[in-house]
Length: 52
Image 1 (spheres, rainbow, N blue to C red):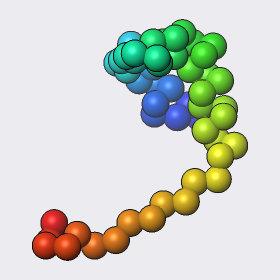
Image 2 (image 1 turned 45 degrees about the vertical axis):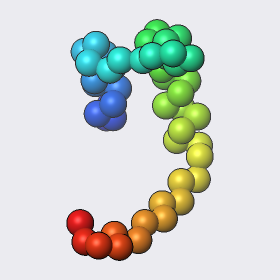
Image 3 (image 1 turned 60 degrees about the vertical axis):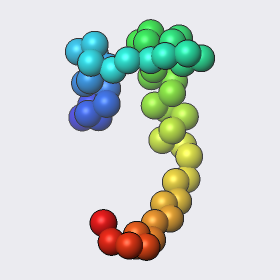
Image 4 (image 1 turned 180 degrees about the horizontal axis):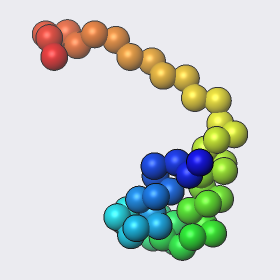
């Protein structure tokens, strides 16, 4: 199964700017995805102060 972001990258629908321009290459993008999968992500979210 290929993640959605990989499909978008293969289709040329992702854009990279500034210091991340090198991520447009297939190998560099694959390395980015591999590194992000190894990261333990902790999401902290709270209700908006005045409503949505």
